[in-house]
Image (tube, rainbow, N blue to C red; front, side, top):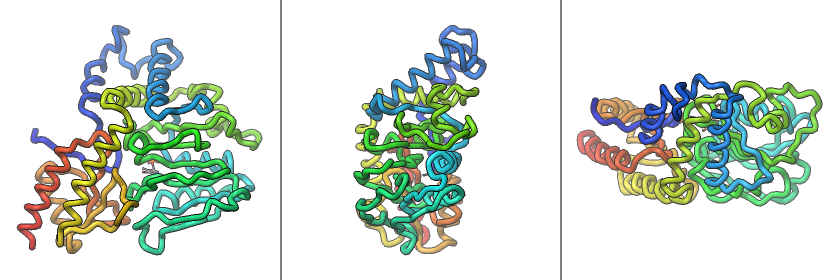
Length: 356
Ligand SMILES: *Cc1c(COP(=O)(O)O)cnc(C)c1O
């Protein structure tokens, strides 16, 4: 098999070391004679896996004791809904619209509450992060932001200080972005981008951020999930185990700060190359650029399609941009290696030479 680099936006590349460890432990986890997949979620051995994953991410993200760490199902898309069900019913809620995922989050919230879009970058195809005032937010039950816009390739560089609950969809840059968790009420992230395997959604929630809605379905109640330590029903056990292995790997590499440094090197290399090219272009400029998702285009759509096809033949996989955005997109999450960026740039130079 030739070497491939997987630029997928999600499910995305996992660290090879993590996959090897999982392979090693697949049939017989720590002399238990069983695979993690076969273990009771109420057994002591699984409890250890769950608590280990929580302890590791708590340290990586500096999560204070005021917050709980949950591993839920349903993806970030379920969080759009669960969040609104718990906290938006009959209320005014504030959203910043920075792209496709923010819009989906707003759509779900509008089922239950009155959504106020306090800022949007829709006017320029979501190619920047809009500014907004943090004054007079008291009338809203919460403020929701998408920290990294996976399709559009923008990201917040800093988070606002607000005196209402701050909610973050950090699906595509959790663990590669510096978040002061103590300033947030709830953070959610699907695992398949920067945490592990699809099927787990990590939620970090302030313990006193309690819904006032009576009789919520237990599976959609944060309070129930906190009280039961994510074990109200069978959690995604194998996915939690894989997340724990990814957290171990991150710890070994130096944690989130080390990842930010590495991701900055990776993405700067690609952005610099694009910025010095007359052939390729990136719709996002300046400090709003994402470290993890980099959209770019060639001079026309025919060449974009040719680019994707020829890149695929060379083992540079999943570079096709999202169907709503077009062009190409390189997703450079934590597990994506620097050599993959170098291989992409080499190919871009060659392709440009052949298609001038
Ligand atoms: C991928 C993504 C989602 C959707 O995640 P699912 O797990 O597929 O529901 C939501 N928000 C952001 C920012 C994403 O990148």
